[in-house]
Length: 269
Ligand SMILES: C[S@@+](CC[C@H](N)C(=O)[O-])C[C@H]1O[C@@H](n2cnc3c(N)ncnc32)[C@H](O)[C@@H]1O
Image (cartoon, rainbow, N blue to C red; front, top):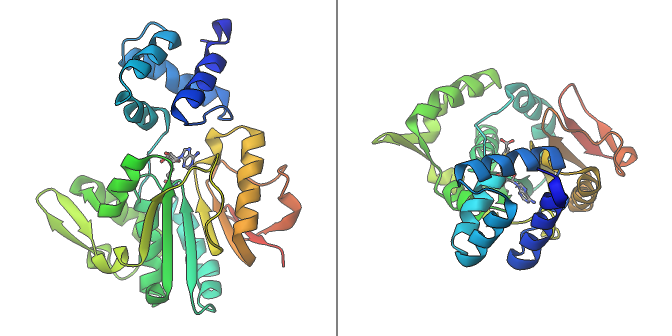
């Protein structure tokens, strides 16, 4: 795939022409995704792909959808959510107004899971959960809070393993093959596009979750994004990452301390 620096050529041209910046995404996974797209689109090479995108810009959003990885689920890695209940919710409860940022929210399941935790602790009314992603299609889907009913089994299993006791069904209505999460949850959630590569912070937060996103970035972009999170967190605020992500070896490593067994750090006071 690297023949003639095709990937470099493609990501630079794509950024200049369409404004989406994948130049600092980790090469391994980017190449795998591009190969997959070439095969799905039956394109012989990246030059052909680029020319197709250029002649039909409506394909760009399809491309962005396929190059990013919007997989997610509710209470993903239940142990992490168990730790949030145990460690972070008591801290959040000390604030009159609680602001949480879910960066790279995909279709929103993680943001709904967080809103459910807040509701079950009686904190939702004074909370705002900001859920952002670079991909406008997933943000649009997330804002509706509608998920296929066949996904609910996994949601429930994860919810119970994460320490949920009230029953997940208290938070949604089932309707014709779908479930829609309670409007009370959505009333405290703000959905918006936000690109971690190019956009700046938009508020200060007591908790930021950015799980299974940094893994797609190279070291230099990871550092920039971790810096953005550091600046966006209040003193003693918490940062949660995915199981294969870390701040160790990053430029902010000495400005956070690890908390508990999960990928959770607290900003040093
Ligand atoms: C694998 S999903 C993770 C979803 C969720 N956080 C979780 O752990 O289940 C990765 C998400 O990161 C988003 N993403 C990738 N690059 C991004 C960027 N530069 N800015 C914001 N979101 C980005 C993708 O669109 C995708 O929805």
